[in-house]
Image (cartoon, rainbow, N blue to C red; front, top):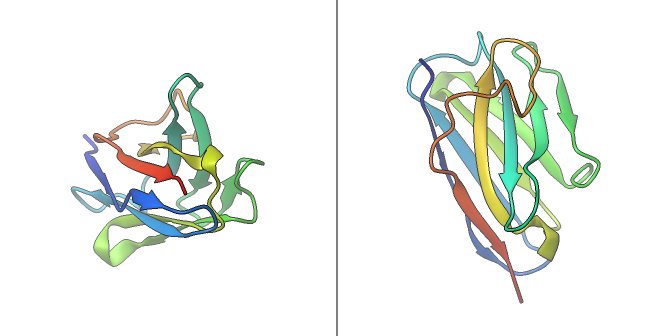
Amino acid sequence: QVQLVESGGGLVQPGGSLRLSCAASRSILNIYNMGWYRQAPGKQRELVATLTRGGFTTYADSVKGRFSISRDNAKNTVYLQMNSLTLEDTAVYYCGAALGAVTLASLRGWGQGTQVTVSS
């Protein structure tokens, strides 16, 4: 069973940056594909970034060029670097793991999420 803990959220001004972390309870990054998704009030969940165990990345159009997903296998941690943040990025961010293709339905193991608030 995969258990993940998200951290790193906070309050940031528009144009600012944050780095989110997703720590796994055990060594899984060479087994699972990973993804970050977000949930904003009144909006549908959005899959924002994925990272396969082979290192291939994908991004939602809404974050492409601004967000970057990466991992540190030694620390069992996946990161989401978020730059040029906008008000529309305000949401609770979750990470999840999937053995197959990463979709909102396939992700498992997410924690309580981490709140990102972009406000001036």
